[in-house]
Structure formats: C-alpha cells, structure tokens
Image (cartoon, rainbow, N blue to C red):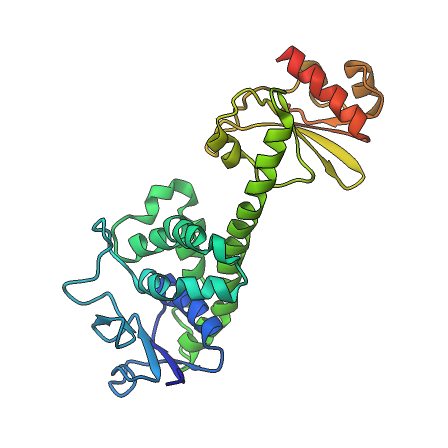
Length: 304
C-alpha cells in the first residue's frame, strides 16, 4: 500500500526525528508529514511510517520508536535513536534516490552511519554528553538544529510545528552535503589510485584536479609521496600532505625561505619563473604553469 502519512511526535523537536524526516520525505514525497501524539495517528497501519513516537520498534509494522524498554540497540550495544533506526531500514533506498552509484552504496551507507548517524543516536540517548566537544559543543549539529526551536515566550499554538518545518530544509542541506561528499570521495578514490600508479617512485603526486586524496594515500601505503600538485583554474597548486585529520603537521613542509612570499619575491627566493604565492604556514604554493609548479615541487622534495 502507498505511504500516505509520515508521523512523528508533536511539541518540541530534536535532531533525530528531524533528520529522520529528511530521509523519509525524500523517499515518500507525496506523503503528508504529521506531528501528533494522538493515538489514532501513532497506531501502526500499512499506509503510515511512525517514528520517534509510539512506544514500539517493529520494522514490519513501520514503527520506529526508541523510548520504550527495552530500547533497540546496535549489534555493539550502542543505542539507536529514531534516526539510526530509519537509516538502518531506509538509508540504502535514500542513497539510491540520491543517485549514488550501486557499487558505492554499501560503503557509503556504513560510513554515513558511523560518522553522522551514530553521534546523533548517542547524544539523543544521553550516551555521550555534548560537552565532549568542549568550547565547540554549541556548534555541534544537534545543538545547531536545537537552536532552531521557538523561544520560550513564543506562545503561538503553531510555534513548534512552524519551527520544525522551517528547520527541515536546513537539516536536509546538512544530510545531502555529507552524502555528496562521501560519494565524491568514492569517485576520487579510483582517480587517486591511478595517479599513484603513474607516480611510481616519485615523491610528487600529480592529480588531474583538486580532490580528496589523503585517505587513499594512507590505504595505499605510499609514504614516499611528500607533495601533491594539481591545476586550479588558470593556476597550479603544490601542497603538503597532512599526517592526519587531527593535525596540521605534514609529511614535509615547503621550504622555509618561501614562507609568505608572493610574485617577484617568491620567484627570486625559489628561482622559479612563474611562482606566485606560498602560504606563510608552508602547506600550499601556487604557480602559473605546470612546468613552474613541477620545478617548485622538485625543489621542495630536495630540501625536505
């Protein structure tokens, strides 16, 4: 039977049912999204998907709550929120709807679950405190989405619903951006592997354009590669390779004598005609031709 209603609870909202709504409204665009605690709406039926309300988890009955006891748990014992339950059951279909290539769906479904869905589940269930983010806790996604709730003295009868539906496209933009980025990384992986093969024993990796590459380098165990070059608009860039996402430390820095220089000053310091810019932190440089950037890269390798 056709799904005619997507039902979640009324009143204040949290990130989990808001993000669940992103997934479900894309898959069932003709269904009416209803916020209610009325028993007639939160009783399962074949034409409804009920989530974050109803006191039961039964995928066959299309009800996905997590507040009851015992609450649904992942295989590793971590708790689900409604978002985790909806993603487990509808996430792959959502990726298909976003035109993710078939061969990438399982890997992206797993990565999105680990990096995006699980933190929402843990925060919603109190399994981790937002304070673990320290001074950035107010900038976490649950906090940012929560900030879209109506203020305490907005007593309009539709205030909660109005805020929920205003927040929905914002939540959607976060979800779809993450999926697009994961899909892009999957596309880049093969291109980077080809570039690694072409580089051979060289310490310089040449890519056809700017793209995510560090995770592929780590997987390929090519520690001899120190710098990456690629075209960017009318120019070419030379970049260092960060040791991890948690640090700005690199496998090798660009020459100290280039730091902060531009144009003629950089040409003089590097001896390369066409050198245009080197960041003061020595992680990126720019030149106007491939020939010039290759010369700069070779000098950087020699000094490293």
